[in-house]
Image (cartoon, rainbow, N blue to C red; front, side, top):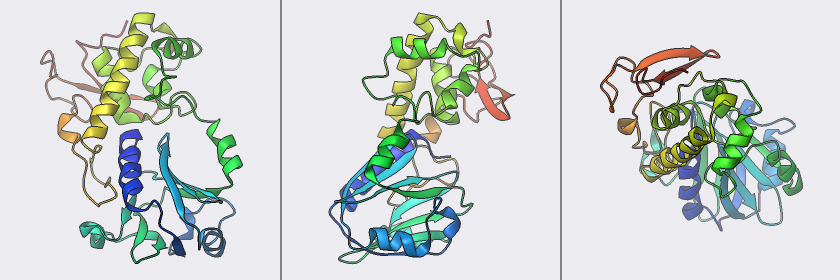
Length: 276
């Protein structure tokens, strides 16, 4: 599933490619990716003739703001892709659900083989309200060690699961939660409220470091993720524990183990991440 680094990479790509361009029409092939209340006709009516003013990201969402109008929020789900039609590999897309035609030719394509993603259109004030349901951005100045420690003390959830809750920290998913916990030397099943201040500091720094490093190499492609040019991300070879069950820990050589917490796999080194 695309997480913060993947959504951020796509947003940066699109910022260079579509800001200032006008949507001339919207063609919907699979309406089940549209949010509540949206239809093929209504999304076209709301966007056609409007110019894209800004492209950004909030949590795992790519956010397109239009001049004097709505905000389009794209959650990529598990297999969603946002690719510009001019990209050399755009021809490889086989499951385009929505096509946003742009002036001067070309289009922005939303492709989603499993169609678990979602495209919503909000009024600006409604999107501001929706954002309040999301947690702190981990790359923001507000994400301090003190803030993280304060938040974790309110929950006994396993820290890996706690990190996946978008109401607490926005944008972190299973890949980067596992990687950050390894770097911070914290077992993924530890109750969140057992973290000390020093451990919260290590974890905060590890989260920011792993997200920043992943953004630099344009995200992690395990299977489906592609950037806005249709290219794969480069972080998969740099993963230290995620998906590496049975392989040696890059620090101590102990085989990486996998456990299931809340019906999702967690990967860790039993030597470096001792469960207290």
